[in-house]
Image 1 (tube, rainbow, N blue to C red):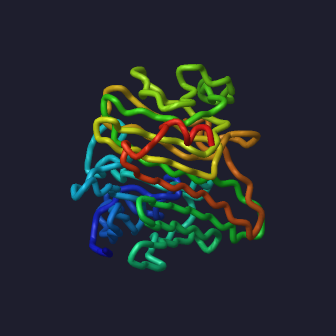
Image 2 (cartoon, rainbow, N blue to C red; image 1 turned 90 degrees about the vertical axis):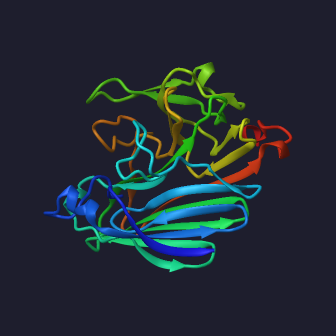
Image 3 (cartoon, rainbow, N blue to C red; image 1 turned 60 degrees about the vertical axis):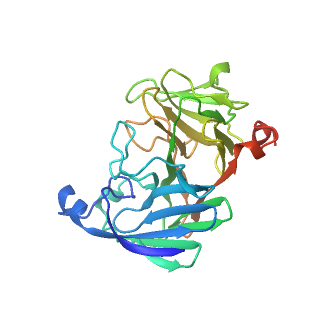
Length: 304
């Protein structure tokens, strides 16, 4: 099923970029398109306009649509400014002074949607959403159309539903520890409690760290709801932000810091990728929903 309608959005995708001379209230007041893609297994609402992303992602649980990502309308400490349930972000230092075009629908079909935008004819970016059975695949691409290199980063940040017994497997080798503003973060081995080598309950204490050395596969289980979500991405770093008092948590795919500088002064773990003229950076992630009873061994994604 394919449905297109109008919706409201709140924040830009290219970092904190906005249109010159436009207030935040003016940007928030503009109307935007919302497209719904669905098949027998999944339903996803996708926003376009001055910002874009997923407003809602649901799974068909024997005739009842069950949220996998947190409801886009919910308020709370984990809410993104635009209240999107999943927000792809492209960070470009200095891009706040460029003129940004709206994300527009480039192509749409029964089970896929492609959005495109440009920044001052210097950069081109696309987002592609595709449904196939119980799998949602997201691809974000950023093309440097300038004649000189540019530093950038792509992040995909879904907010996942959290129950008291939610479990996660996302094995990683190390953690970046922030050491204060202006001080480079320090890489330390992941402590045992945070290695997530097998499906393990989310910690009861607050977690907000970037994990590196990730194999690109994670598994989230909701035993009470009897389904799981397999996450597969083409990056070796993720950020887990889980607060025990919240009924949602963030699993953010991002660049590893590696040898690059920091993207934002307030976040000492995100890295930059240098793109030469004409090069493209691509970030892909898939989300596959399965009934938990159909899994033979929940730790298998961590060992493949």
